[in-house]
Image (cartoon, rainbow over all chains, first blue to last red; front, side, top):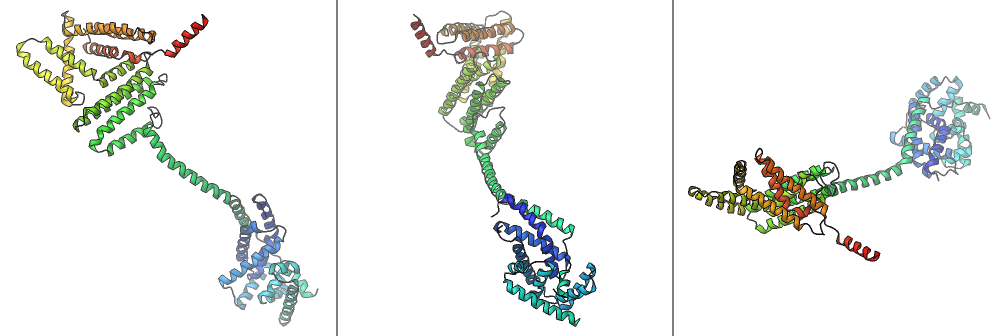
Length: 166
Length: 360
């Protein structure tokens, strides 16, 4: 357990290490909305700070902070009822892609990812956007590594089909 | 890894904008400080609040209580104005019939303060403060006696007040000693005269002397009237009765006029008074020549009294009022001399004797 003296320094180190990953995580799940993702990132680190006393330093901070982010996202969806229409999501994707000056092929991938069911989108973004391995994804999503592998395979399969149809 | 996976691996990695990063970082710092300090701060805060509340409560209850009741809160003390204010409030809240008692208490308080001040007489302006307190005490005493008289209180209460104040004034005289300023010694002696009622006796004696001096038949009525007034004065306490006060002022004027014949060399009652006073001084000198009294003090005090009489005789032609006051002061001092003189510690004498015996 942390004492107050060590807490501040360690927490700020963790923040520096994971701020972009958490932001990235939200950006891919919140229709590439930068402002909302920033707010969500801030909320997550504040929640983490609140609970940092209970954080066990022997365990992975990354898994812990992503779990908080995931729960926060679920709450966000629940409260805001952000079951956005597919067309709306696609149009926002296009805006974000244009801003990022991504090549046309990747633009298609973006669009395809954005219309994936949430559980596939989640594993794909964690795996490829956040560059986490299966074990880390498993600990964040609190599922087995096998399930992670299966979901990724399934997500890629759907994505391929989707991209072929475009 | 197929083409899709390569593409996915090349998905853009967005970063938090610097501005957003700074905003979050700043807020986190603040939250960390709050979180780090909050538990202790809260504890401290509540402890502090509780402590501050207790102290405030204590201050609100104890300080005024101490200021009001404490005899150590004397003129010059920072709590003294508070004490005065509380007394004012007490007086304003008091019922009319209780006011006399409060005046009596306040008079005793002023004397108690003077007593405390007299123990620190070396400090600057202390003698002035004692004199002011004595004046206040006498004024309050007059109001108390007036109140007692109006409310039909018995003379027992007045006697008790006088007895209490006499004891206090005796202590003040003892603390001030012969070494104090002449004005202070006079104030104490005259105050002692007042509480002992001797000032009235003197005024009465002066008045009687003045009346006895006149043998003219047409003035007989006045004489009888005057005597009646004198006895009434004794009953009513001339100090507190406005009519009596007027009478007393009139008496004083006539007493001043008593000095007039002296300038012409005619023998009058005033000469007799001075002679009586000199006799009293001689008697006092003999009485005080006892081993229990500090002889240096005795000598100093007798000199002070003699100087007053001498000065009164010198100025009675030019300043009758001044001469009268000097004589009054000399009389008061003669009557209360022993209160000012330090008494030797009997134990010291015993110890000296023991030492001598041992040496032998």
